[in-house]
Figure 1 (cartoon, rainbow, N blue to C red):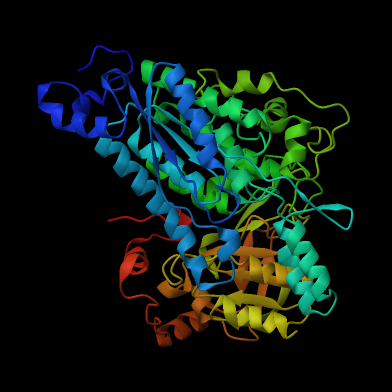
Figure 2: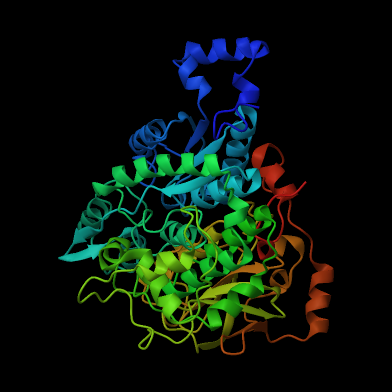
Length: 560
């Protein structure tokens, strides 16, 4: 073992006469003897040229590496994949998105194990790169941290802030004849003014905040917007910090405890965050060896007030939250309310309670409400169970649906495309319950997000009068009465496979129930006649994923 502080693993690659061939190959790409004597830090970059969320990470990586070098380490950058949800939404390509989370985690694990890194910084941007990176860190349990590339700035259209959510909803407005081609084109050109992840409290910004609240990212750094000049500074600081972690051998599982994960859940509940956080945090917990269930999300959300007035249902975007005081302000509010577990230690070495207690608040800010005056007294996540979802499903209630009850006839579609076509034709009616099935983790495969459909429903003026349930999932930009992750899924013979057009479906959020008005014998009889559809893919990564993936209620993780 090397006697260099922090060089606890990489010596197996770089040290001793027998490693001369390895050193020869590393010298070929510019690493000299001095560099190889130092702790070697992997910089896992999810940069990709496709889409704004991760586009700037190549530049940001240079500042991380500068920080590593300044602190006495040698950085080695490598890349993994990324799939843009916003670009693939509503297409066959969307099936690849959730699958990519597992591939990202696996690829980071493989490169880190293969090269025996002493530490790891994971640069993330869009939706699946964040949980994939955290999962890899938890699995490897080597000193490391996550740095989020930051949010995009809002666009300007018709003298108001807009995000990609507005474009998706405009598709429905346009289809309904209430928006011209030119207006849609103008909005399209204005909505995304540069690099950075989607600007509301959608999945990326939700998971970015989770990373800070569970302590795997330094408090306050993720919230710095993508193109803010301070982002380069915090990137360099992240490189210096990982060297401290390597020298002290502080590892992710010491940070990501059950108490820390509950803090992450509270941040989702308090900000009206994405339902995807349920999937991702269950997956992270599994990798960290922490027992966490879907019911924990409902329990924590019941005791957590909704405090942040953020899109998709609120008024403000992520850059507004940053200017108001950021995630530290939100954590401070949770600490004040007695909801935050104050003792978990973060990657900075400070407890989350200490970090939260140093919050500052911009004068006159309206983004984060005081604990004494919440938007709603309970949080933005509700888990429903019943004869349609025995293992649970997830509803986001940040839009004021916390006491909502809806009863209506089912309109059943066996794919997202079939439903979208019905919306475009104006075939849905007020009071309907839209059912989209065979889009679950196994049946999709890949559990597509339904933003194209849900946004089109809102854009068509039916957002307050039509409910939707699916064994697929939703974008963080989704709003309305929408139940996702219905488990067991249709492809596994879950009760959702038994629903027929006209069956009466009831959402009862107060009772935490999702049910169809059929007796158990009728459901059982229909399922006896049911036949599983042929798999969409019979080879390649999608087929492999379909065979290995677990239920959404377990995080949709792949297991051998």
